[in-house]
Length: 175
Ligand code: MG
Image (cartoon, rainbow, N blue to C red; front, side, top):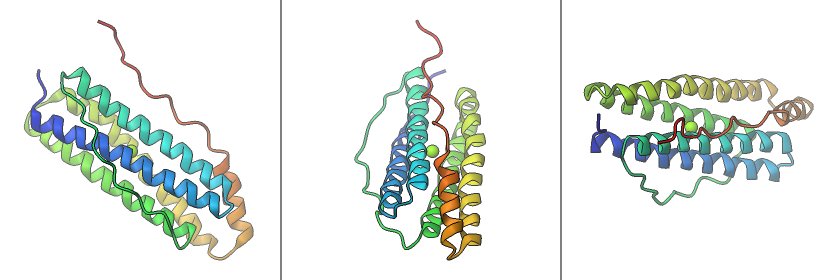
């Protein structure tokens, strides 16, 4: 079944939005580097890698369905935060926005009975639960930490141990 132009456009916008998400996390990585919190900066860099992988999943789905990818200008992200807590509050709010956007794509796919897109989106529904959970958990830890420098450095060490992002998915079958 051919994907509709309307649905393909929405997925293309989301592809661009995932790159924008990566941009936000990369800006946060730079800010945490400036704060000498190299562990949290590392966590943000891995998050950037994950956003790139998300974008590529949308890329792959569009090409597999015979649609085209259109790369658009990416807005410059915020570059300063008042505190680590403020950065993670932003991250959590941003992930909730991403979830809403993906649900909207799902609503249109449901309307159009595009089961291939619905099946494809299942991975993202699960992933967004994880993304919201991760950012919410770190935000809550930062609230608990408050002004304690030793506790903040302990969190920095913990987040510095984050493993590599999963590989970017490749095309499953050849022609
Ligand atoms: Mg994402």
